[in-house]
Image (tube, rainbow, N blue to C red):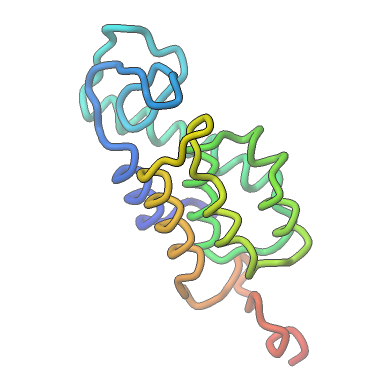
Length: 161
């Protein structure tokens, strides 16, 4: 499974394009659409270069979701998680209550778990609050309710049929 267009647009919207390296609110050198690896002060990228970096970073986030999630996901759920992992990192995701609850099959608790990840240090971030709401909305958005195998997900009646 790959991130869908809505998930990629969500990342682009909340990361925003910056052609010159800058220090993000978390104190990390960043460039393009939220790229943080090997970024140096004064570094520049074109939008085309930033798109390539974004796709590579998204692929890493997709891999983390595939590696750590043990339950079926529909396309929107997968895409919401990829956006989340892109932002918080695979290590934080791996050790999160969100992942633990999801792997117990508690799909309905995931949106509220997204909403807990809104702090930069000890300060609540309005930008992160908006991003987490968008991720929760994407998680809840219907896309046919099927996982990557085509089976109906999150429905006890579909499983018993």
